[in-house]
Picture (cartoon, rainbow, N blue to C red):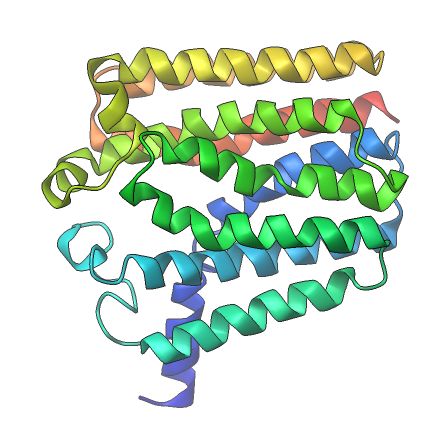
Length: 285
């Protein structure tokens, strides 16, 4: 394998060719950063968090594929991933994940001590999440914690403390992750049942669609509550309404449980997260 071909495999291992995961991690981080800074984050801090998001999401993908290297070959959607197809060795994967996490840690060194301390549970969540599918009935909730931990870190970077509102935002992200990752899990339900791993789509069973919609409702209600606490204006709440309309559209995509439409709904969550952020961005101008 040539160097270019190997780098292409690393790119696929980090999912840089599929940026949806980066975006789903980035939106809640930006929500937290904008609330914490009253809409005017330092460009330096913003750059650190955006690049850190890319690095940690990439590292998380590598760890996820390492954890699932013996499972992915049995799932139609994942059987051609680099580790599953044995185009990248486990040693290479671990070195790559460690290098990415190390670069992310170097990025936050200029920030305050609280951010450095919070990076420890953030790393633990990112590394341990792939293994929760073995024993947690709803590992998507754990994913929400991992994907939302940029929120308290953003507050720590700006305030040097983590107020109650940050934890409400984190909880909103947990419910959002349950919603969108259940849609994702509905795509693989048959294969997941066959190989015996746990997902919310399996746990919720025939109530999966309503569980998704109630999770969206809880996430958006919490986001509205935080906006009310910060005395945000019309633009922010219009963003929430637009996000709610997107969630309703998802109901019509997933109600028949067609895998292709469920996956479309999952990908469409980028626009839901963007709608909330755009409302917040305009409201603080």
